[in-house]
Image 1 (cartoon, rainbow, N blue to C red):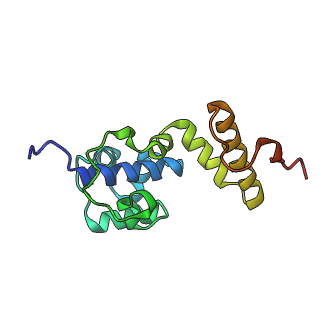
Image 2: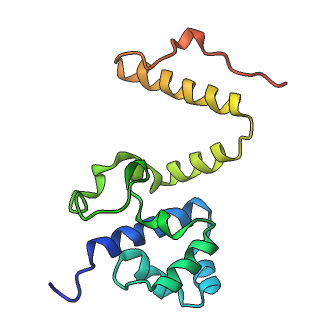
Image 3: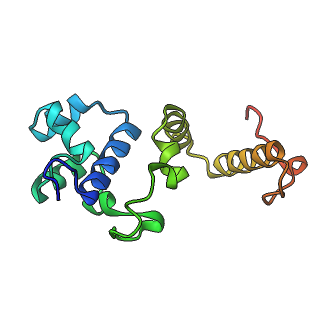
Length: 152
């Protein structure tokens, strides 16, 4: 193995750190300051170039308000395996969407909505819009049945 080539697991963990950091709206500089390294070191962690020791990973998890196991989870919160890590980056459309500016903005805004009914309404609205745009099969609730809460 080439010493300069990042290990697949290190790259995956780094990408999960980056995703969580961005979801929280935290800069690399701020994360670096809180874990006691330079922002260049954080960049290397996120790219999978440098490995992260257990105590440092625990500190990163604390700063990012999650558990260390979060960085190893795949779909459906399954433990990380090597299987599937060689797939192209766009193999997981949800992860790709979360890496975009729009994905981060949408997720941050959605997480601020405390009312479960409003959140469910938004989900149904988006499903109906996607179904209408694609001309595909209805995804549950017909668009006519969606009611949006008006300034209560």
